[in-house]
Image 1 (cartoon, helix red, strand yellow):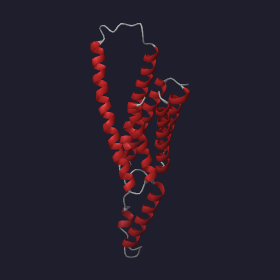
Image 2 (cartoon, one colour; image 1 turned 45 degrees about the vertical axis):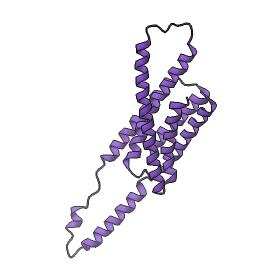
Image 3 (spheres, one colour; image 1 turned 60 degrees about the horizontal axis):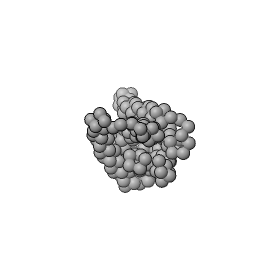
Length: 215
């Protein structure tokens, strides 16, 4: 791996970590931390086998998907029937309703993180982790194959090489499409005046492109 690719991988991971910290999403922060550690080790230290990092990134993506599903299944708060049934002797309905709405809105603002403008960016981020897991595994296999080349015939491997080439082409196209979608989400975050949050998508897009074409 070239020194430029190593630097870009680590820099992209740091951008992702800054973006998720700005969004204040705990599962995403944990996943981004795992990603940064993986990129540092793969680029410079090579202490942990790549298959371990691949499994860790895959688990991080699955955990993000589970957290997104659990957040989407949380029911929205509803107005209590007691407030609706408030009579003339009680607090006026409009006052209770406005007060309840105000308190609910303030509670939501206090508890809801400054996340992406929609679920699309979060879903794409969760999808990117399994893609990176495949790229890390492919990178490890590429490095291992490079150290064991020479002295082996190539006969009988044409069909296998053709199948692998077709799979690699398909995955390359998928990486490009995913990177474009991440860039669109990043631009959307900037348009909504969330430049720090957009760093997550920028970093993700740069990461998978570097690992796909510059490893």
